[in-house]
Length: 123
Image (cartoon, rainbow, N blue to C red):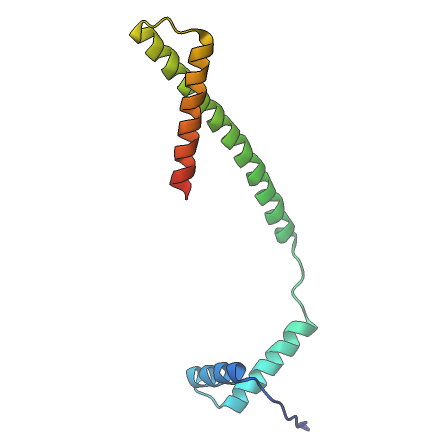
């Protein structure tokens, strides 16, 4: 087999990586460079084919994302319902004569406080 000669210049960072790899493998920097060139050419000559699995993964991720949006909406409604139940129960227990508009304002304030606390916990 006839070998061709090439002179190459590597940036310092690549040279350092090449030498580190060569030391780890226990071979010379020249042998490591040959291995890197062969591997790089093989990877570019035969790129991996996109499998059907890749498309299936993307589809499933989109499906999970859509379901998560539904779960978030459901939890949001459950939080609002819990706030409403609490405010009406508190009003009844205290025997207050608050109007529905006042209780609705309390419900919205409680809901907003709970949403704010959830946002703070996320940060």
